Length: 233
Image 1 (cartoon, rainbow, N blue to C red):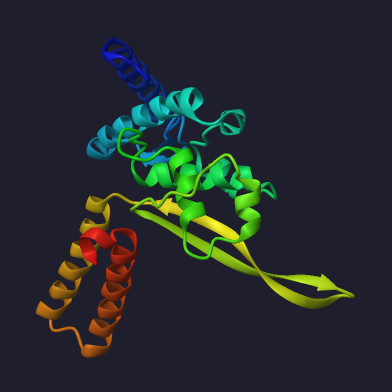
Image 2: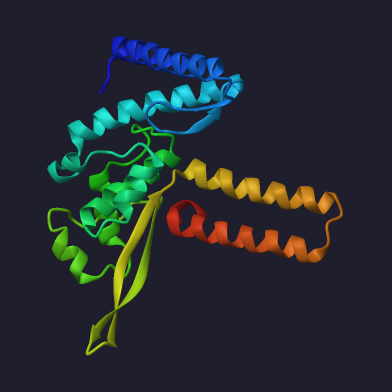
């Protein structure tokens, strides 16, 4: 990881890159530009948003270095994706390990690339294997990891069919992806949904629309119970 002096230099470097891109965009008469590493589009006049993007960009660069130093060798060879395009490319790859790195990149992005907060990819792989109903083929392909439950981890699966003589023969469960959320992230999402419903209720919105909020709140509550049974159970 970066020491304090490295972080100062990194922030300065990121700041310089932002300034260069913004000045070039303004010179061309353009309003929008993209961040140098995560490739996020933003308005050159939105100072509050730019300040946030600079922090996230520094986190992303630091996370890429951390990943390169701590991830399993196969994951290091793939590399941590920082842009949406690179993440999507990995999640759509036919290789399982590429999929894992791609989904890990999405998950880390949702935590603003805070690698001190977010579990490692090894912990996430162990959590996937410990997930209820994890198919045997996944255990066989990820033998280097021991199944170990990980609170905050959501895993989703897809159903595919094996075909013989051009006819579906048997359905199989296939890894679809994963995402990790901290307790604070889940709690904040739940409270935001509750506050949103209350605002609509105060504004006199009819029951059908409130029912949509109720359904959303129920979904988030269920996710909270599944992610953090020790706290929401």
